[in-house]
Length: 242
Image 1 (cartoon, rainbow, N blue to C red):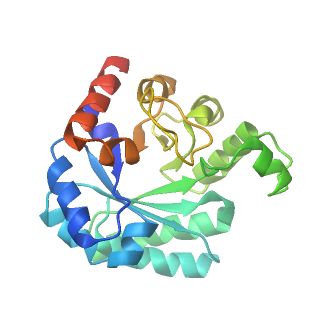
Image 2 (tube, rainbow, N blue to C red; image 1 turned 45 degrees about the horizontal axis):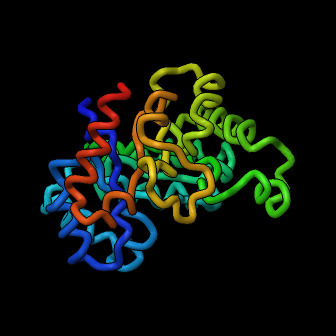
């Protein structure tokens, strides 16, 4: 896998035109394009085939499914038919919900004779600080331990990996020893970049050295004067850390 293939570019924009412009501009510089809440709410899932036509080889559907098991299973069936490379679910939905999501993904892909999206479980959002976790959400565990626990729940439920802050990569790797279990890290910012609303951040090189498989990066690329050059600089940093 080339260094650029580890970059998941978050296309957090509010129009089809701008999304496709970004895909065309960056298709040779990043490996995956993430379509999340902002883009899909604005454009609908009709954006997926349009992104592929514009050159998006792999699409990360950041759906963050979180509901009762039956509802999530039903939603997963539709997700599979969209042809996305992966989809996210919330680990805090519990093991029954995660198992239902994974089962629906496998069964639908088999019955539809199509590729199965990878199922990634979101642990704790990178905007959540240790203080918020304890004082607002009333989670008594240490943040890192809580993330590691959720990673175990996701692994045992059959998920392909987790979404976690780069600060929790090492404890996840120690807790889940399977090298095929993927760790995808948002909250990645090149040195000197504005961290925005992220509370737990790290540079691309540091995240890769700690064991991240993929890095989710949005604003540092999209807000750069030359997004393609910004993506290439990040790929070069990743390459140096491998």
